[in-house]
Amino acid sequence: MRCCSFGLPLCVSAVMVIVLDFSETLWVMRDLWLARQTMSYPKAVLTGMILKFHLLALAVYLGEAVLRSRCFRAFGSFGLPLQLWVRAHRAARDMATSCFIYLAMVPFVLLNSLNDGLCPGCSAHQLLIYRDPGHLERKETVLVDILCDELDSEEDSTDSADSP
Image (cartoon, rainbow, N blue to C red; front, side, top):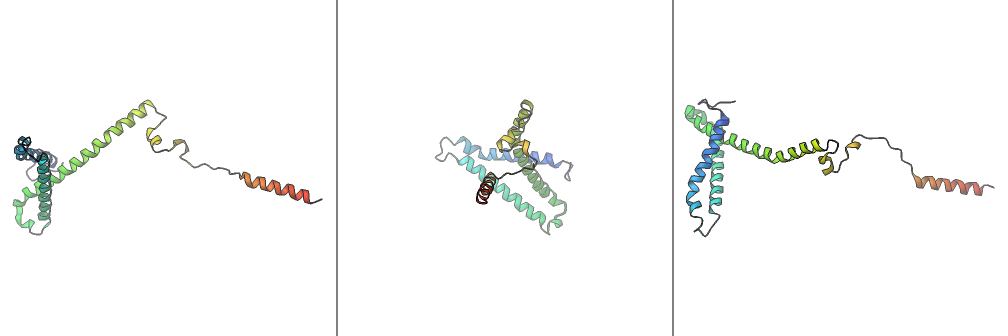
């Protein structure tokens, strides 16, 4: 695990960032959430959350720009909290993306495992993509043209009839 300058692993910082961001969002949106019954615009909480997370994404992007700038090295150790904040947010985004991909694939892996356990010779995946697993390798086939054979036999019979 990679640790930041304070000795805390980056994955722990990323989880802390997720928890703190969501708790801050809920704290800020509490007035809208409690007053949503009296409001004429019922989707104000959702709109506020979208705005908050877009502003957070913009702030992380600007933080990355500062980290890439030439003057960042002049900050010295004063720039380390910004570096930790940006890296923790990027790690949190990567963790959320990985969790989404993992959770999207788990049901299909379980169904495939269940299929392999119950029907070992039949693959539902092969049935879904219309592929027969018995014909995966190429085989040599002899083609016989029936029409040409019939025409050749008719020509041979007319040639033999014309020859006497």
